[in-house]
Image (cartoon, rainbow, N blue to C red; front, side):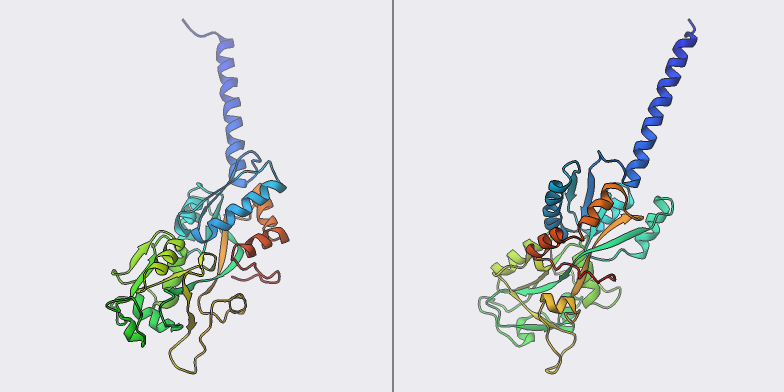
Length: 307
């Protein structure tokens, strides 16, 4: 039996309505204009703690907006943004040219843009029993780089109580971490990699906790995760008694005299729109700046515009 004309028309109308409803929803998600859809932020573990606090505070200002924050590292956050699995990528490093190329290919030429949300100083930490107070970028390269030309604390002129063989135990983040990438690119020559004997850890707070427990250890972390249970070293650009050794402070980060100072970024595909734009604009205000400062981050000076 052939279907009636009215039944075919009904089916056609239903299909048109279904397709018509689906297309605007998909485009609205891409443009950040769907007010009912949550803002998905993924990436930097350095920023995760702050972003969760910021999302909670923003909900009080805009209760209709849901913000989902997950970590996983800067690299994973950028990949999620490029593949439309996140609306905002949190990153503790700048995107690489290869990542821009992938975004342009997958997202019809869309160009990721960033907003600096905070400043940070990657701090090098040792156990409180360690008598070392400062270290140079060259010495960090010799500890973390391939070849281990500096492998014992005695190579740095100190004896560490409780470290039986005086062998340095370098701790690091895993390679999906923006902090890992920033630290490696700052202390090592281009294209060089860390030594395979280095111990890789999932999170900055894990590194700080292990350094606090192990006299032989050295590690690095963003400022928000530093505790009083570890010693923070000052850093010098090169060896020598006349070269200033600069501690990681708010002042040395703002004036960029600390060698491991950096910016923390939030990326969107193209200029932010809709609720994402509303949230990112709110981040520039006094309430967000206070939350960042309270969490150990350094708010961006309101006159600053460069990375």
